[in-house]
Length: 396
Image (cartoon, rainbow, N blue to C red):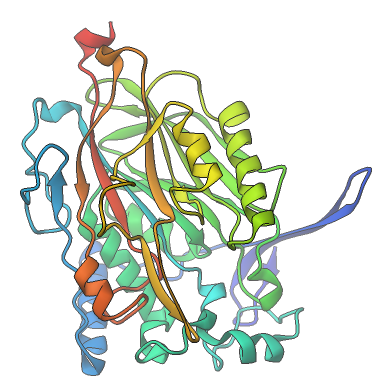
């Protein structure tokens, strides 16, 4: 146990792991207690609306409209971003998921923001080069990237989607904010931090991957599998969830692969996907892989996954409006597809889990103002899908 510079309890483990080739530093730092332990569900919703209203003083601040679009038609199902009105053969077999890189606080703080711990890296040099995570050119970065406000907008986006399963990357406020808040809305969750998160040396908490699930829809079976890739510093969290209405087990993996567009980084991502397929994922049964792969559909690592019996819920080849991150850092603007929801293709159609709908992509809105903004609290867009499990008679 340690105390941060604000007098709050935290957990910290700082070790050095030695191998025959090198000595690797491992440093994990986590919040110990909730930031708002006494807030009720109603107070949380009220605070979300207050923050949206506060940000509206600087420009339009309503979140992008998101619709569920059936996979077999182009018609819109409903416009609330997370309703349950999609026509289905059997609603009892239906569940929904979302994938979201939420942009870690420790990777997007402003030049005047005090970190909870004393940095061990040259912070002034970092701030000069990387103020607001490089997003200093967005409109009102001191407002839209102020995490004391942005955390509520992130929570708002998750609650609006209202999915049964939630996968989040760059999560560095799990125990302090997201877990206790989402528990008030019927979720439980597990977090896997990186063993050497870049934000830690800057005075922040470790970021990593988290999976949440609605406890009235799923139950955790066994212990979560926590994997650190042999190549790189990234992690993969795997949970086996029992769908309560059908008693079927769905394996859910959340991961965040190596960043940057260099050839060496793509080689690392390919090694990570190879380990994911060979050592981590099950060989049969409904399986989902949710994550920020940091690489496009044409890359070797994504092709490797899709050639190994996995399919994307989104059309990765023919949809010109598909984009999951559209952002400007300094003078560089990038528009990419790097976030994915994959599901396993079964050999038998009778055992196949089917994607029935996906969340629409707000292409026109992102084109007008790149991410993040007053209207969206991350540099990645939340994506989502609905699935239909095979009926019990088909799986028997």
